[in-house]
Length: 92
Image (spheres, rainbow, N blue to C red):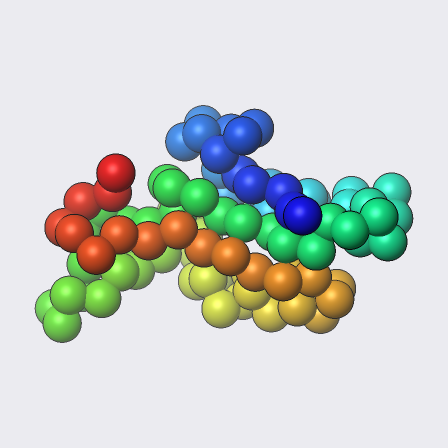
């Protein structure tokens, strides 16, 4: 079981701080003890353009430290990290 960013935010106001605050709230409410193990970041975290090798990049405005930094915080809190991506050139 887990939390998915799309269910609350879609593409509105999604950023690294929202994810960090959500992790803190799940821990504060002890929802992790009730089975909430996953933090799933759905669409709208990535930059509009990929790098020169075609790799997806985090949006530098909303996730300035990148997704690894966000994932590190999630993992440090004992939760698992899911992230949406697309093999195509655009999101869904």
